[in-house]
Image (cartoon, rainbow, N blue to C red; front, side, top):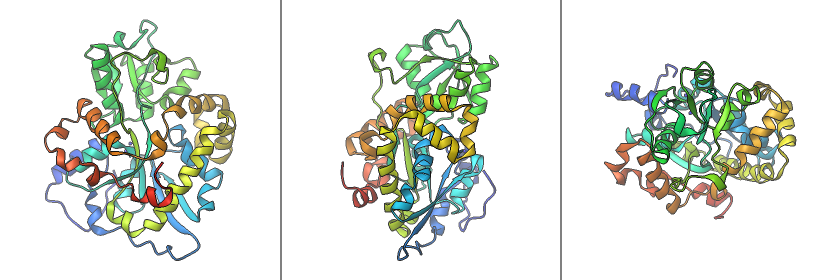
Length: 356
């Protein structure tokens, strides 16, 4: 979840490690944490301010844009700017242009492994990247795939690819594409790989056009394999600890507004949500049609906000286990670095909402 050249106040002596971090998370280096993120000057004003970085205005972030469109952040006194930065999102986060981003938990773990502090403050989704799609009519289930497009180690896509190999007892030849939606889709449509792993939000447009077909749907609980892995939290809202401390009031409003909006998002009809999003932001037009977007929303909603977004210690244990067996071998080398109390900060959630 995806570098621009940025100037930061601390120069790393390990530039090689920083460049490897680009592939893992795209954050170049979180040494910007040492620079601070600026104080929350608006805490005493009627409205607080935050900027949230995302990759694009599209189905993967539909609940966030729904909250914006329906005025939920305004209701809690937060002026939230959603910045759809594409590949520039990590650089903007490092440079302090965004205060919080929506990311994969596995990517956050990879960053922490480099010695950079990141705090997970809200669990946005679980299980959504386990879809398998194909353009090859001979492929009827994941066991028939021989070559698969996926993300890079640390991304949920890659973890699910490794997990699905175990579930189906296969060894795929993986093409790692950093989770780029267009590249993943075109790779399969062009026949460069048999299949791709990822969220249905990536592929629904091509499915609607008849270019791809779904061969595994993780929301079909009745047909999950018996050895299906247990996943804790896949997607998260994350911030640098110093920024979180400096702008705590604003973060509390963010979590409250997002959580309130999500309750209505889960209850609204997919067609109404799709129409609202299409009218609100032109980025959603890339999905193709209101019907296509509505179907994507319907398919992704079961994966949203596990335990109402609250990340528990029990869930954290499952999350670490999932990502360790899904390709992040370093989790076994220094487990203390990834303790719940060091990586997860639910204090903002508890102050804004209370425990679920």
